[in-house]
Length: 431
Image (cartoon, rainbow, N blue to C red; front, side, top):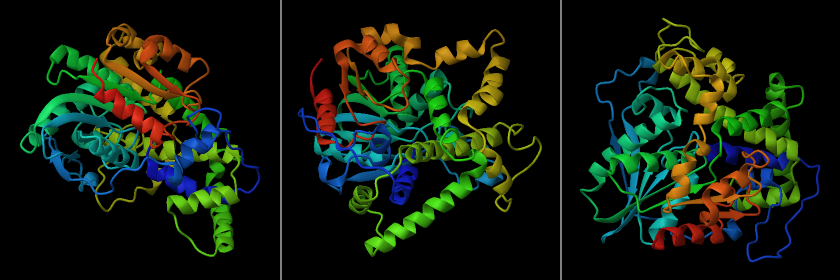
């Protein structure tokens, strides 16, 4: 999920004035200030509790071109290759590839936080944009239809090899490692399995951070967070946002100034704690924004027929407002049933919807994950993208290689000192 959208959501939190905040009591060494998984997901780790890493790290930004001869439609005139980044050490060091979560780029806030922490710990870091981000769909996806994990893994593996080809001119590497969060977490598992077959990197360690167990199950939950929590339904989402902005203005006047820094948002949160249904709708909205951009790119790149009529040529001056209005009313599950599944069934006529859903899961490769001792899991008991019982199923697969925190929501505690230290220790330990 794109953190910028959640930061926007966090700014809006100031508007909802109706509940009393609840904070966890420090009964264990791990302390996280939000017991609500929705608050944890939106607000993330407050600045005072965050892991401290250097803000300035040596970084090289470059592009790769997996399909240099691909003709890019005029409406995407600004796209030119897939951007990656390398955070590098002067000396030889182990390298960690990071795969971003849904709709996130190589330089999203969560990615940058991981880059800084791993750099401080002595690693090189190569950051890869999510296959669900439009730039990846347009320039680096082989089928331009993101979501099928085995195919996405092949696309990611191709990008990682091209990125490494450029990075190796600048750095010396002692080993290769892999991680990813949210969707990037489950994709890391499939990329690791692919690497077992092709052995380009021979990953030493692989860490899955807050992955879904089943992709379809998780996106269904995210779709419902929006649909179930906007008063009057999705048709009234504009009124919902207008009301939220008005309350934000009211809260800002009370504070005397406006500042969207983490410290300011956290202070507003303490003063005006938000309603849970409001937070849930904002999380669902952020996911809807990300999925809308992905669906539009996939539709245009495959010749249209879903949102954009076939034969319609879009260019830089075409108004995209009519398509946006349709896309904001199109959930990821709509995309799955109406566009994604028919695409794959056309190529595999024997494939049923349930079979495709089952393939988009860690359980589809559970035998590999049970045997691959180099792979670990980092999750939270209250992760909002997991259905009841799914965290237990993941623990059953990974056994003592699963590190589960009691709170943190979905990726909300990724910058918590205990969590960051666990990540670093995971990659440092042998075996």
